[in-house]
Image (cartoon, one colour):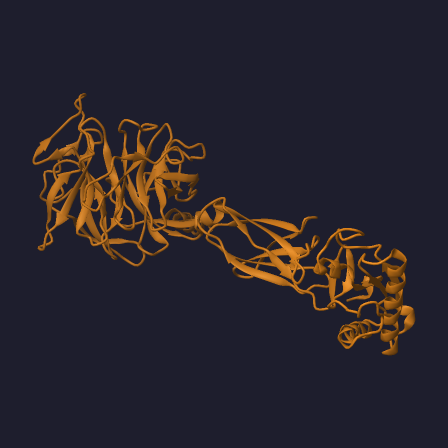
Length: 527
């Protein structure tokens, strides 16, 4: 049993799992510092290491007694391992530090970090320190890196490094402690103009930067910035890896801590994704590694923005044919796999609300007694806090709610002027009433006939009662029990609009009042 327990512990030391990520320490790590992966094409990784090189003097840096950092390249296997590792470029590597590169899409231009050293000469700030600077180089037809130049927004007086290009090579993100920084080091960016010049550097703002250290930016194809910080309250200790959306040159929303196992109590940094994949590499000096800084391979199991980024869906449930509000409707939200997420009851204004994830697909349905279901499918965007309007319209084939009453749904029944006999077009609608009453043999109705206000009150009362009785008689003649129908005329006593005596109204408005309604008195018998 003890042996089995030891094996399990060792396995957990190699691969750790959480809800969002799985990770492993790659075999190529050394006892020295290995970190800062960038991909050079599909299957090649460039990274920095202070490991010893055979045949080199391996001059040591006095701050950690390790050789100076150089750039290496390795083939990336399908399991994230590095094989066939060798120095990347004799033109880029010098006797000083080089690390953290980024390439243009065509792989013909590289931006990289190096100590303030060029043309075999180094430069210091006013205090005598050699600082990090950003350089650029182009590849020639023979595959050699040429035209190595220091970028114009560097300065001997502050650090500038850790470059990352966006998807279309129009923006370069980097770390700097230049004037205007909010903390010890901040994430900055420049726009790359069409003529290969650069805009003034701009700070990504307080949604990204804090009063402490932010560094190692990586911008993905969806404009999500991954970077490391030790200045946010939810950190685990040392540098933690965060992600935040970038829009209009600033971070938006809350920076998301990517959590265990990507983050530890030590420094975790330099996260990058393989092109078009959910896998990538990051660096850490956590306990249990092979050396100082180690490179780890990871797989993203759940996108953190699908969990943290939220939008709001609000809608109204209406009667499809009339547009009438339908409060009390049951509204249900389903995810893309058809799993029920949440249900709610439309309020007294027929309004419903849901909070949903960004970048996700959903279906929302509404049901109400006596109505057919309606559903809508929608997909959210990747912008947090947006509000979406999703309205649902319920059609009724048999019944409809009007002014709080459940009625048999029919088209208007018309009578000739001052007449009460049943016209052929009215017979078609009354046949519909007969069919429904036959379908529901216990159903009882109040048959109400109404007039407009354009005659005397007594005349309209009498006319409406004659019309109500005429409608009842016709239905009874079709075999419906007379006891199931209460026929009543209301004259002009229950107008549905303002068209009362002496009010000027259109013919259409008056027609709304000339109606015959079939109100169900025992809706519980309808299944």
